[in-house]
Image 1 (spheres, rainbow, N blue to C red):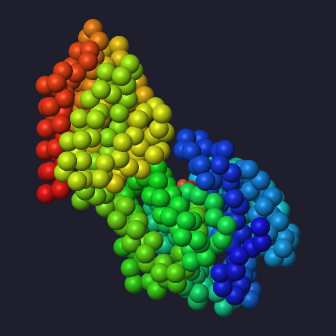
Image 2: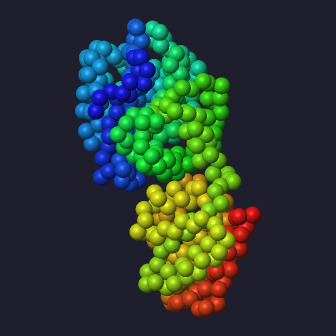
Image 3: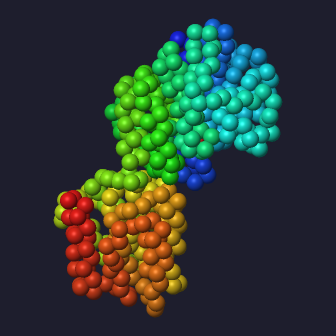
Length: 402
Ligand code: FEO
């Protein structure tokens, strides 16, 4: 890859991470992910904004691009660390060794993290909220935006070119052939939209109140480009990605989309035997329905759909007096991600003894679910069970549709 030019003296140096990897060791990235760093050159000083992890050739790729910008040893004055998570800092030791006199600028909360993660204390300086850094004709301004996505996160704004370096915020999963949103094909734009939503649900959703606060902090800034550290640079209508993030964050409290996500699992087909009654009942009210089976569907995709949906239906059998274990895992992920308040139904079978419902009740409480009831049966469902499931599902959809 070659560096991409954002403005005179402003470049993206990026690496494309392949699809065989798991992001954070958990989340599938079937279309890969971008790690973006940025170079800003003033007439007097040069800066690298955010780093990469030495992952799938990223350090070499970014190193080559830095070299092509003639950023050799000694040619870098500052590294700005907007966020300490290792996808943006993993190669810090190598990069500091290459630029031994470089000064690292970060939030106060990042200073001890740098020490603990990388044993680096020399030439590390905390910047404060609103502080500026003059590079000679280019001025960087720092905005503390904690918890997007760790407590130490901040954003950096290049005043003259009106470019916001936002790190995780406004990011997306996926690798993209081009740097800017307006260069993508219609198909790539579609992928970008869905990979933005899945990235948000998987990585950022828990921190939604901070996203709303962070966006409020940017109010009044004239932003020409949003340059995150994952995904593309938002050049055409950058306000749209900010607005998209505001909407995704608003799903925590609601209102959410008038949709229902059905997450189901089955051992021998007896829980599955009620699925069509549920789906038919929902669809009879014309509501969009997402149907996902676990463990066949990774929780990454489940969380994406549940995050946006006002309605949730959980189908699972009892397994040894408790919930079916893959569904327990999915619900644990949903709870950690602060999925709350969904209008919810459950259905499921049991063999010689129930028990799933009792354990599910703990999630109902923890997730403050608006629980509308359960259709639970021994063995296979009766015609009455099917009718009850249809009626409950229809009532749920009708209520959501308002
Ligand atoms: Fe892309 Fe929270 O790191």
